Image (cartoon, rainbow over all chains, first blue to last red; front, side):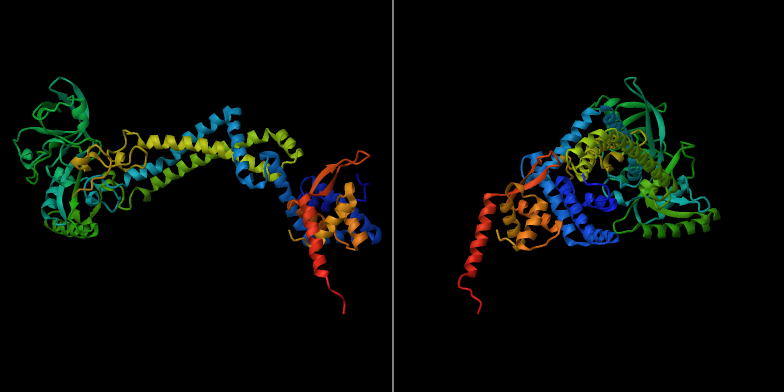
Length: 483
Length: 100
């Protein structure tokens, strides 16, 4: 040990120690001490600092710093992998990975906390994206982009008005931009009693016969509703969904013609829709409206929510349809009631119209933004908590780090190990979280509309609905390529 | 391996010093015998590069008084070969050369 006062100043020693790592670095430092001593002996005391600064400016100082790092890396590689540096870049991450995996087992509590926290946090954080996707998707029917909702919006409140049956009749008869226009109740519930005595509460829709023409989804069995079913005094009929056929009718192949009491009215089953079809929301049966549309009679379902939607003609843009809709509204206002003049006619995509969003969509609404921020905050808080737990584990291992440093491990080496360990925890926890999010998104949630199953990016949700597959490819999930 | 001027001198110093060929001694030897006064950093850069090229090896040797171990350098067979080739090529170049 050099005598006090005969070494290089403490500050330059610290810098040299950082520059020259390892045991060779110690020797370099000793040699520099010796040189400093020789210099101090030959020059006035104040010039020592000048010598120190000069050393820092020498290119060789920096060349040596790099060379010593290279050598230490080679030696480290030989110690760890028993080979030269050629395998270093592969072997070190592998070694760190193994250490990281070992840490997972050694600290099972931390692993469980991290996996649980991210497993909960990631699905919550991603929930707004799922909601946005469901609210703004295209309907999974032939030409789904052209299925649009026609509605009046009150400019004072920005809320859409529920349409009247006369509105529907008026629009249907005058709008040429739409190939077909249909009227449907939304979220209406019925009590179904089968001829076998089974009682099932179901959500269903009272619809005009044009409902099925607009969607262009043929039934699996029987026929859809036809105009004759909608006439006053016509036989009471019903079209049921695939799952209702399976569960309530025991998948009876001779279901057509069987009777079921719906809302106390015996109705004959005339058709079964394909699997997955539950338009407009999660409906399982479809009744004819029988409201004598256009005759000014009251609808048989007071208090129900209603929706008018149509299929745009080929080559007609929604803007063009909306312009025609405005013109029809103006004539209607002049003819009958001026109260229509203040309402804004809009033609919006079906999913936006069903939820009553503004025409900019769900993603542009402040509630959705708030939901996104809340989801993000939950995710950030979860990540911060996991980060703190990992930090606490690292802080508890200072003695291990000290031993490793004493044995020659570089700061970079220790840091890389800690990063890889954290990555192992993060990948496991985030993988678990994403898996849960995927499962949650793929699940058929009661609040989701039926088309969510065909619109989500979850592993089990991607595909073509059965009614869009050709007969030849019914058993496959590939989209139908036949015309 | 093409050796630089300072590399040749450092390797020769290593050979000359034998079991005492450590950093400071090599630097002193260069100054004393060859008249080359070089900095500590320059000597160490040269020694580290020779080691990287496999021309020398080093190991830590404890001093007789039990002080801090010093790193002593030795030439490898590859180092000897490189040194001899350098010497031979230099001799060939000098052959027939005379100051006019």
